[in-house]
Length: 395
Ligand code: SF4
Image (cartoon, rainbow, N blue to C red; front, side, top):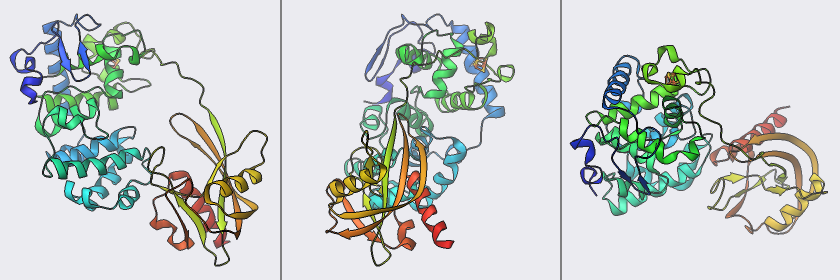
């Protein structure tokens, strides 16, 4: 569906407030917080934000291009990751995979290696799969209509809005974490953002400037990232302070209302660095599905209640790889936090005893030289294990 028929009100009427807006998966009614923004306020908010962006917007590499592929890569990298971390990865990625075709034709291991250290590896696997779909179904050209973009793996509504507005100047709204925070404050929304999603989409769509959607959405993201920050927002410098309900009521540090979170589970893991008589180490490649899919790791698993680290390692290696080992000294202990849980990796040196290694609970197992470990994509916690091995060898 072309964007003009998807959302005709943007071009016909600069103020869609009070109208019903259709977005895929949502039917947004005007009966939500934010409906009381007047035409005058909306006009002012747009003008103030765009003026501020002209003076203070960030100069970022992906803003110097209209290439939808480059913009798409940046949008995916910026999910859950800060600009300064993304910058070197983005530059390197665009050199290694300069076009959709280069990415589609690359080996998944190369793709994961280029992503190593950025975390949330499903993003890299989805980029790779989506590039292959674009090559097969769209002749290698990034699609320009919202439903096609949103059908690609790893692209949700706000990412699609970010890409279509930045690459093609289409009037598609966004609602990333920064935008949610700004809007919750601007409109004084007194419930956690997850309970006001439809209202937040509506306000974002209402505010979007139909004449300059590219600059408006980029400015919106910058405002959240640099002025309306999670802690101590710089309200005195904010172009929206004349209209901000949080600022007027001195509630900027109380909003948005926090989401109630369940306590983070903590898992104790036993991990084996298994050596054979030739001085090689056994590593395995994780199954494609699930956390860290397709990456390599040192084998191991969860310590059961009442089990020692050593007993856990022996059991896990027998169950997952089908070999006998003996467990030696502790190499390192690593704490690592994922989004929904924490792990402590209890890493021990182990000695191979007998049996043929098999990929029972993984996709592949391999004996490798220490010097070759760096060729494989590993999760960040495992990179620390490699460092510890090398450091011990230097001593
Ligand atoms: S005035 Fe303060 S709280 Fe309101 S949008 Fe601006 S920075 Fe955020």
